[in-house]
Length: 430
Image 1 (cartoon, rainbow, N blue to C red):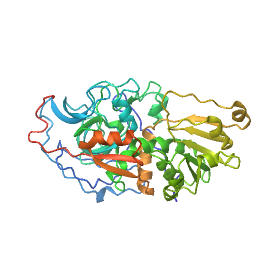
Image 2 (cartoon, one colour; image 1 turned 90 degrees about the vertical axis):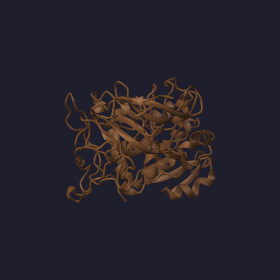
Image 3 (cartoon, rainbow, N blue to C red; image 1 turned 90 degrees about the horizontal axis):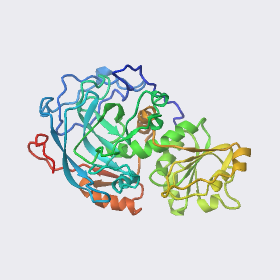
């Protein structure tokens, strides 16, 4: 069992023209792209994320496809599944991109996790969508082009890479310098906010600082949901679990909670799964929970009051804050992860808060320091989401499946674009 042996990622020194972290293990990806988009003059081996990675002398260079050349043209056509207007069904759409920016990379997408956020953005529930746009923010694929300003020890063509919800931040505030871009003082940029395009396309262009190397021990389908759901529960555990053996409760054994159980157990916690559905006990225990209790049992007269050092509320339903806090020990912390609709308010019992020295905290995804560490942790410790696999061409059916609550845990979409001749040279929107 691994208990906090992973080091924190530390920001590299920054200059006015470069900001970033050393990311990725030395070991190259085992996936070879069928049609890479750009040949690189030289491929540098990324710096090891930590000791114990494969030595540079043992690296096998990835074969690169030379069809995509740097001077191919200033406008390149991309295929995607886009939302044309609020609440519309996704439909095939082409858009053009210009020259690759100095610190940008192109990723030929192979897998997309499907998150409730994609559905909220389609429906413009938060008022930040700009149409048309291509959803998808749990993106995994193969790097096919890198800008001239991408560090030589960063991502290279042929590497497997992933992109999550955050695609940009100021990178100069104290939070960003700590690798906590999720709480950037100027506010971070979401991958699919304000008309930006996500992963439901054949090739996705992103800032290289917010793309992460997928470790060899983690398959692409499993990696996709980790880039949003995984980091969302990993970050608060990393932040609030201060010692092994802490009593950790996870409320809601669903898309977020089933990952939180795995992370907490592998971090050395004493883990209890809490859910309204008693039929989830067997699965919860298989994921690492040491015990299981229904919500009514835990909050009843002979329940689990005063039991937990840390309680993650991953449920999207409205839960009474007083009941949550009653389950905490003195000095315990409840972390709100799930977000119910309707902008609900928490009514906190002040006497319990004050006399028990209890804490109520929130969390939102995670920054770069946590993201690469989480991927490495998952690969080493076998943390994998429970998946339903569907082709991207069935994305509307998949969205209905998730929105109706029928998806058991996570849905992953695999790219199934038909091959076309002259792809990348059409430069026409449809």
